[in-house]
Image (cartoon, rainbow, N blue to C red):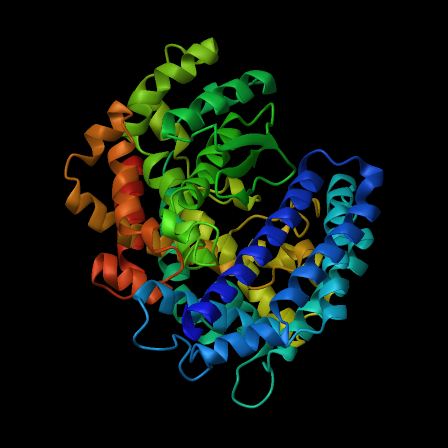
Length: 510
């Protein structure tokens, strides 16, 4: 074995070990969100802190830096020796990027952040249930401070490196800073707000048949049936319940998704199950040569969201989908028998201002994201005091969406992300809408009978297209590279906006 081969093998071993440690931590985090007894939070936070510190120290050891250097992978040329296979060069690029970021974080900071995150998430769950923002505020301030320090360790907020918030945005969407996101969001805010006003002037479709109590146990049974009909292999994952639906990867063949069952909101569990299944399909479909490595990951959170929102909205909210699924749903809930396909389709596509992001319609959803983006910018520029967030949230909801929450549980406390320290994550949701519709344009050109196969319930053709065009790359390509390779285009808002305006103009007769 040559010295290069030996160094590369050692890097793969380090990467594999760190990935296993990360997955072990993910098991503990998943359990905390689903089954952990209330009194177990303190110990769980300590356990997570220890695991994450071990993984951080292993990855950031001088040996990792030395081995990367031996492979010619340095900040200026992260892909290393040009004679290496392309797959290995991409592996070095991703490892170099992650190493350069991680090595700047002290071990005691990593441990403190992991422990604080566990305690903060548990505090958020309690505060939301009790509608008590003041109980969560100290944890929120801690997570803001830790996030700020993290970005500063990376060099943001100093000189030309960009703002602290730019550093946090880069975790989830490489290359997309405040200015770039603001530019993309401007036409979205303008055109979606205008469309909402037109919709408000029209009679709303009748959805009274959904205003009933739907047994959570039967909802659970239907969700299980639904995820399998979409193609979710239950030998490789499972569905559980959490306060906030999510997907987590515990192994190449172990993907966990969650939903929640609200007796008077049947659609909540249906669409969160479809949404999280979309995330799971991405994670379950990386090619064999990427599995177990850092390349087995989404290109970005925005690209990941493009998949979940494609399944939830483009497929799940379509008329062809319910052509096949409505009879199945009616078999679980006989009270819906007699409801026509057209009536049901219009009802599941009601549009208008809403309080809760994850239950927002396609028209208003991105406006929820813009609200959070503006608040996060203010928090990290110092213009917003965290204590003022409840009042600012209510005001911005009124200004942007025309509604105002009566409680903080339906307002500033509704999302889990800030309790996790995931500042900069929210814009990825709206960017996912844009990526998803550009991918969809290409998919539909390649599969002209798309509507017919959706109505038939044969999703294998769609799954195969996604595997062959998106999933096979993992995170070998950055988002702009992936978008260009699949569609031949750069990021655009127009396909998404045209899709929304066309669909809802038809539904509301605008």
